[in-house]
Each structure stands twice: as structure tokens, then as C-alpha cells.
Length: 120
Image: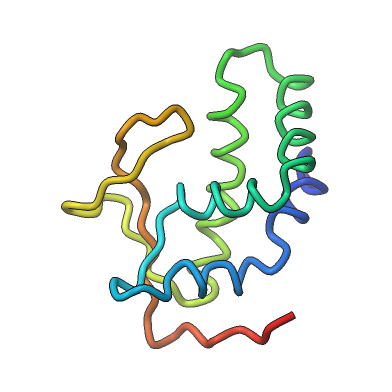
């Protein structure tokens, strides 16, 4: 098990349903930042626990960046496994990070390989 598996497991509860819902708009995609905002809003205590675990492990001011990178790593693997196409350089799509800075996100596009998940 990885250092943050307990927290990540909770943040990724119902991840397939979350991805489906986030990609239900007319564009049929979601960004890594949308997923992070959604999952951490729903699991705020666990998000703080993840941040504290990062603080305990690293000596850096990039606590949020490190935590979000761990979430992003798991998201990338799971989304592709579920059939979403990953686009690390989307043209014309912008999002914002936790600090409100405009950034180019990683985009996950729903494909015909993605099956609607069962509701839990």
C-alpha cells in the first residue's frame, strides 16, 4: 500500500459515478481540476487528512501540489481504465487551480468504451 492509500481510497469512492456525472454535459468531458474540486468538497475531512499526511512526509511549500498530484495519478489510471480518453494538452480548454490561477487542465473525454456505472 502507498503512503496515501487510505485517504485516496475515500476520495475515489464512487469515482466512476463522479466521472460519469462530470462528463454528462454537452462536451462529454471533465478536467482533472473538476474532479479534484468535486471529490475534495464531498470529503473535506479526508482531504485535510491527506494534506496533513503530505506535510508529515515532505519538507516543501508545495503541499497542495503534491496532494493533487497523487489524486491526479490515481485519476489518470482509473479514468483510462474505465475507457475515458486522456488529453494532456487540450486545445482551447482552460480551468483554474486551487489558487484561482487559469491553467491548462488534463481533460478526460467520455468515449463509447465508458459504460454508465451503477448507482450506489
